Image (cartoon, rainbow, N blue to C red; front, side):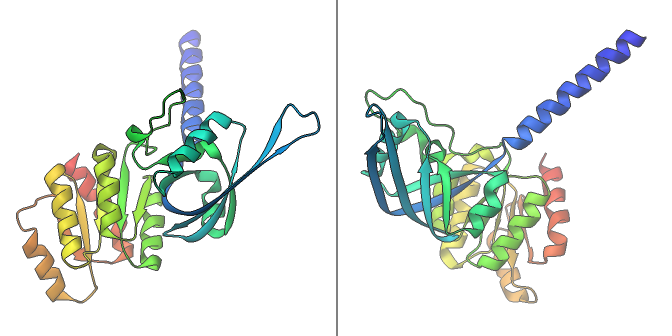
Length: 261
């Protein structure tokens, strides 16, 4: 009996360590547009090594940021620079522990290997063997689409507090691009319809994943918009249309996910 208890304790301890490791590995992905790149090399005293100064100025939903790219993976850095000659849109993977600093700071140091192309499958270059990681981290992302920055941030906090990784977009075009990359990564979409493009976004998403839960938030007290949105998606069982009431959002999310589990 004592031996069995010892085995159980060891297993529980190992499980806790695994959980902590996974928690620490949590990261969040931001889509950015590169405005400019600054690269300079400087030989150090021994003449056999070099010091690299590498920064990129980017725009994102958070505003303008200067990213200081650190790290000694020169092969990956060369790969990234080659990619920047083709496109200016990238993903920046920010560890959960650094997320608040990244959101608040206008200049942020980050390891160069945390910069990825939008579509990892397109990241190909002869002679370079390094493999980029997946476009997203986590398996049950919630896609938040809202042009209102304050509301977007509040919804983000609520969803993350429930334990779900979040991908945020301020417009329907970027949201559809992100969804098309890896539709199987998302467990839910929360959006406020923005005219025709917002309607098309939801229809495109449901065309690809018909049973995906979608919450469409409408202005509080605007029954006309609520009825119109409900009428557009009357045949979609996975779509919930209701006013944006933040205190009720956690219950709505969990209920909808439970129904679709």
